[in-house]
Length: 498
Ligand SMILES: *Cc1c(COP(=O)(O)O)cnc(C)c1O
Image (cartoon, rainbow, N blue to C red; front, top):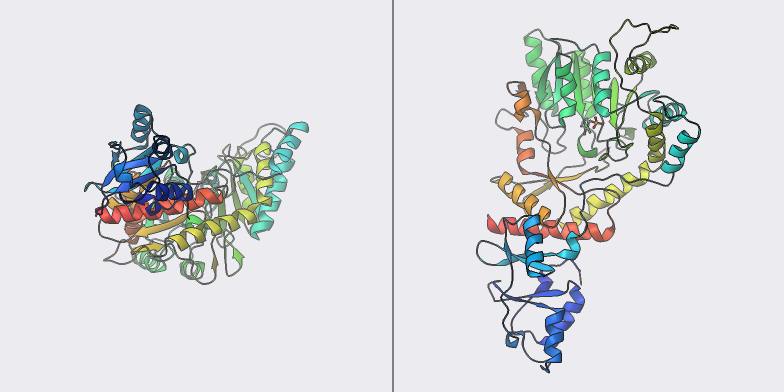
């Protein structure tokens, strides 16, 4: 029996003690829920109840309804995790049934399952990182330069098939440098995917340039070629040539580079590829991050591999990447003294962290495989849920499934999304909405935006109904199966309550 199957915990009052004992054994949750035909909770039955009944000489063929009455302690669908814990502590119980607005029992929270939090995506170290960091300590290369930085740049560049790479203190720093190198400055227009993390857009503003946001396409969720084409045509009519386009590869899936690059090349606009979420993905066998004039990776703690914090700017032009290294180390000129002509930054990755990155790079392939397995498991378990749409993996793509993400169908998608997130949080499971698009952010209020279709704001739909599930490669199989069953149960509850 599936140990996470909630339905298996429900028994009728005419169930015998012996049958209940067998069911308790098979479900292994330590509790059964006695319900009437309309799923109203009559009582709970624990191992202890059955033990006491046996000791009192009650026969195994007796029905559960003959046991001494005991009013169950329950919580409602709006209860938070701290409230559930408080209920457990107050009444010294380890199981709390959850009751919906119609009085039906729809869920059970157990102390054992919530004792460990399941994270959206947490760091997952391999076998070599500690050794490589120790090497940095032993050779006293604790400076923000050193042999690990050089090696990490070489090794990452080789793994994504670009000749040159500059390691930075974050992905955001790499984006900032990338835009500078493409000549972006005050008053320039820069195109940018709207559905993304705010770090894709902020460096545009910080350079004094003006972002113009582009909608997603409905299947792959990345920049819509149709919306981009409309934006380029409109801007051309206005006599504006965008200085650059920040194209994001969301959740481990490359954008449609065939179409996007063709459009941008024709308009003479260089692409800065934000591959912070897509390290390890490919399109037509070509690694993600290698398509743009420049590409950016992030090694933040939640990314597919991490240095705790860090980033990389990659490119095909040696001069540009050398310039990035110079700008990232305060733009010092080659002189004995400190000579400065350009405005620089302190954006270099430290040698200690680069050691972690080298170790992480060695396990990247396994991390991608595990994330894909996690996605496949969710997709299998949730395949029957009506109205649920996964982010696609179109032909030619190999996604990493950095995060397993789906959307709920309209209408009322946002309300059901939030109810599902509350449901999961009550079980100490961290799930998140999909990124809130930049054109809907107060920070970018009033910015120009080109939708996929005049009648259809796709990125808004994806945000309103979108959910990212726990996808960390260090989730064990038991945790994964539990989360998948919880999502299934949560979606049923949410749909039932609609
Ligand atoms: C994480 C992320 C960044 C920023 O990377 P940091 O290393 O956190 O600065 C940029 N763009 C996208 C799409 C990201 O997901």
